Amino acid sequence: MEILPYLLPVTNLGGSMEVKVDQSLCIGAGQCAAFAEGVFEQNENGIAYAVQSQVNQTRIDEIRLAVQLCPVTAISLVGADEE
Ligand code: SF4
Image 1: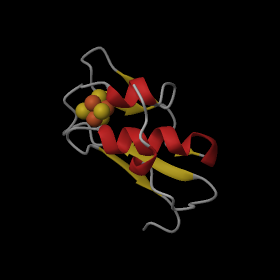
Image 2: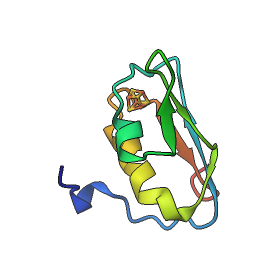
Image 3: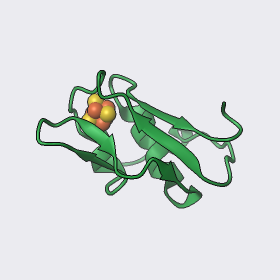
Image 4: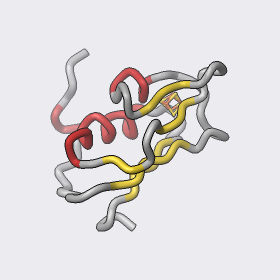
């Protein structure tokens, strides 16, 4: 699948950020685990969770794509300049 560059925000967050999955919203579609492997995983019921809540800039593009592709907007990414 081609990743369209215009889907990716250009905000420079810097530092570490906190990623969360609202499991009450998750429908187990799996995009997050597919596009940010190792950041998100799915439990035995298909419900996603963040492997580590604190993430750094090195995975930010993948995580932002997962946020954008989640069909139920269950993923949130909180950085120091986004609160
Ligand atoms: S992309 Fe959204 S709905 Fe799909 S598994 Fe991840 S959090 Fe759940």
